[in-house]
Image (cartoon, rainbow, N blue to C red):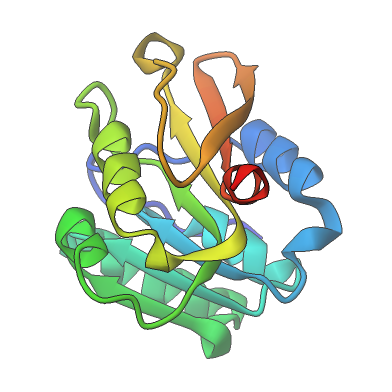
Length: 178
């Protein structure tokens, strides 16, 4: 199904190639998973997760046109039952007391502003959002990439697809060392 784009140029949609590669990596582990899609945009990643059996997806986006688009795309795909869309600043949202833990957190913010780093730093400060074996995946331009050390998760893989890099972080790797 082709989902609707967000009007204007406020979002940077994931390409079909990158999305397919991401879900090939996640494989069957997405089934029943709790997913947080920060900077939701069109909702493409979270909707794909739901279509592959994720148990729940929460979408966060600050922009009203993106929130409206995510809601419309969820309705169009008939996947709204296990989804929640919240209009909020992702950084303010992450500072709140967690109401659930997520198995996967997908971070695809506007480029070239180091927002992905800020989101990771907040998740490191507020690890209650993360399930014990959570993965965090960032989608950035390769020129933005920088290896950063965190207390509550660590980088374990990077995959480059043209002008997109997916960086994977694992919470359980840190827990095993403790």
